[in-house]
Amino acid sequence: PGETIYSQTNTMAWMNDAIQMDTHTGGGFFAGLKRSFAGGSFFITDFTATGNGHVAFAPRFPGTIFAAQLQPGQSLICRKETFLCAQKSISLELAWQKRLGAGFFGGDGFILQKVTGPGIVWLDLSGEVIERDLAPGERLLVHAGHVGVFEPSIGFDIQMVRGFRNILFGGEGLFLATLTGPGHVWL
Image 1 (cartoon, rainbow, N blue to C red):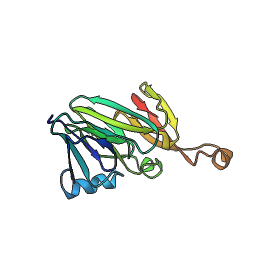
Image 2: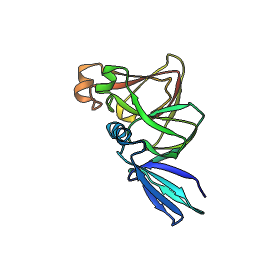
Image 3: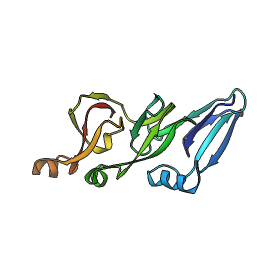
Image 4: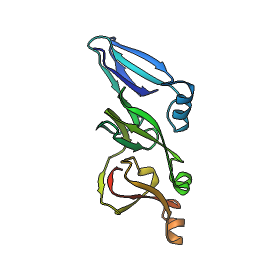
């Protein structure tokens, strides 16, 4: 009783009658506008237990939901639509890409989402999730659509696929995301 969790719109699957919903912009018109610019929803919904409450959230596609316990000031960078729900102590904001090429060709534009603790955030990744720890300077080339979540210490950029036949017949597109360690990534 008294606990509150929030989500972007259209993620609640079911709840009992001890949950009170409150949909709002989450900090005013500009907060909602920034969220929608990042691929999220303009509105967020608070779910508060007025008694022995239960609320369930579901992703849009089959995959994996994982909970991340973030310490004060600890952040994760997420591709848009990865945020499912979080404790009210978690902030959800924009994460601008610093590299122009990564912004235009990285698959998610200049903007990703950044979640910052303290608290628990639940993230939704479609498909099977593979986790990797990258050592300092270690690089991983990834199809941009398969970059799910990464720590802020990870460098994110793009590089062009090499080879004329690879570009024309490889089916991977023109660019691959380059993730450079150190840090943890969820693919």
